Every structure is written in structure tokens, then in C-alpha cells.
Length: 234
Image 1: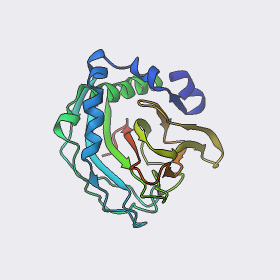
Image 2 (image 1 turned 90 degrees about the horizontal axis):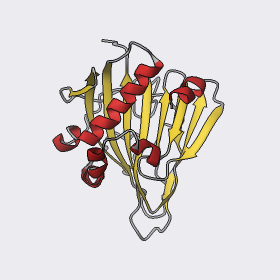
Image 3 (image 1 turned 90 degrees about the vertical axis):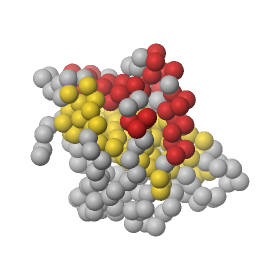
Image 4 (image 1 turned 135 degrees about the vertical axis):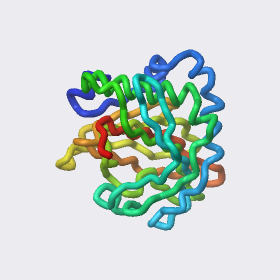
């Protein structure tokens, strides 16, 4: 992972490889962790009027391998990074206490922190971490947009997108591009714990629209997004 990120700025990791980063206790808690995506609040800030996105949000910091939750606060992106939904403080329902304190979330964030420390020696603390639970659920035969803002950067240092579950949907390829707009990687996160980790300072990313395969049955794409600011900006 480290060498690929150094070379290209990003890495795709399949779910079986991700499990090697986790403790057995984390893996055993997977079902309960994934089930929490059934209890997300509606995203009421969608400027495109879409009612297809549900989410929860929390802010953390990582100190010497210990994940500490910060007071609940709004998510903010400038319009430079999110021209569709940016420019306002967006208050989302907080990630539940059980999920926020789970060993699985801890292991995933700590793994990100460990990789950052390998890429930036001496950077053992991560000052600002935002964690987002997302469910994108298309209606009937309509498309839904995991990244309605299109190809974008998040305005952080590092981004990790982890697939939790896909049900009855097609599409959703993750694309990564450099600052000239040239696509450098494209891959479908298809299985649980498939992930992409990328350097947000020099790469942009987007996820293609999804659609129900059978419009008569429910369908959705669940993902965990972790954004990390390694260097203090306050």
C-alpha cells in the first residue's frame, strides 16, 4: 500500500486484504457495524433536490494510536471544493455512540493513521478526522449520485473510501484523476471492505451514478468515508 501511494498517490485494496489490517474482534463485529447503515438520517442539504442520500457524521483525532472523538460539529466545505453543496455549515445526525466507539472503526482509522506515518515519517498524530456513513439509494428506475459534485477534491490531506455493502445496484465505479484531469485509475468497489486510499492534495475522485438492477426491489450502496488532515490548520 505504502509504495503504491508513494508512486501514484492512491491505492485500491480488496476486502480480503483489508481484513489483514483488522483484529479478529473487529472482523467478528462486522455484521453489527454494517447493520448501523440501516439507521442513517436524511441528507437535507442536497442542492440538486435529490432525496437519495442518507448519512451520519462525526469528528475525531488520532493521538499516538488512540482514537479520540471530538464534540459534534457541522461539516463544512468551501465552494472551491464542493460547488454543489459547499459554502454552508451542514449539521448531520451524529454517528451513533456504539459505532463511534467500535473497535472496527478504530482499527480502520488507526490503519489509515499508520499508513500516513509511513508516508510522512514523524507524523504519528492525525489532527482532524471526519468520518461519514453514507447510503445512496436510487428510486425505482432513476439514477442516484454518490458524488453529485462530480470529480472533486475534499480539501483535506488524505481520503479513504470503504465499501460496506451493495444491494441490487449497478454502476458506481470509483475514478481517480490527477490535477490536469487525467484519469489515473478506475475501479469498482464491489465487495465489503474494498477500499481506495488517496492523497487529496494532488488527486481528485468521483463515483459514477448507480441505478437499481431490478427497479421493483430496494437497492443501495453503503460506504464509509474517512477524511484526514494530518497537519494542524487551526
